[in-house]
Image (cartoon, rainbow, N blue to C red; front, side, top):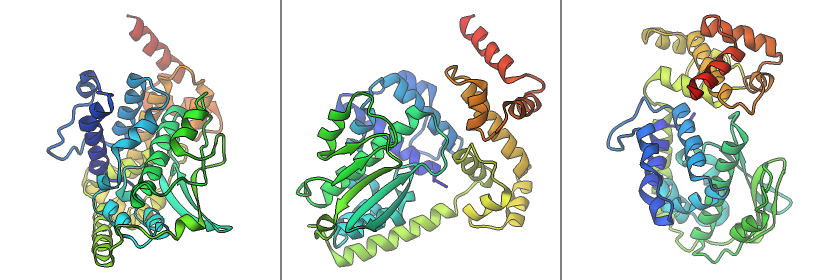
Length: 341
């Protein structure tokens, strides 16, 4: 669903600019996740990127890291999409662009803009990502904060605040810091992640509005979006789609629709690469299971539920089939023994 190389560019931005925020990333992280930003990194899958962010959060050990990271992503960081946002006639049109071209941003969430009761609501949805709470909260913080910075940027800082910001996660004892950042009431443990704007804010003209530039930028955004949909490496694209929804056993029909092709064509193209949809599906679930089992805070039953199994016994049977007879419990015990050796 998302372009791997595009999001790797977001990691490049973090590497180059975090020191300017007083938060240099230790070299050990780059040794663990080697990247050559001068070429394509096809092997650095979406799954690998999520592992990178988990390690980044662990190493930086800052509960407000997501809010701080948003400073790295002003509108100009998004290329043509950001320029289209600035050239749009008003805030409402800018937010509609976010809904339409969310895949051109660095978010892993789907953006949806709606108007209700005279207010505009930009909602962020994790697109089925069954992530651990820490990683989920990080992306919510970073992306909602980036949207607030973007809204202020279109109005030269003159757009005072949003009306309200809501987060699905708790405040972690930092509610005041969130309110200071967003300059408006912030609600935690809410049903969704969202930013709400008043009708007056939506109608506010953008100071950089430019009809001709806006038309050109939108046209380029449409071209880039089409290019993303036609990305290379069909097996890698299927893997990325499967990793987006670990708690759902997607069939080949749903994956084909997301990739803009037919099940028959997708099956044939996978066969040409020497694999099959079923093989990829089982491999992805095995990788997800092994990763979740490393988190000893999760019980076997909780890991099973995260992967979409209603019964832990069914998960155990599947894991033993994938691992050649090793149970999830035995696998976890082996990890502990290796760590203590």
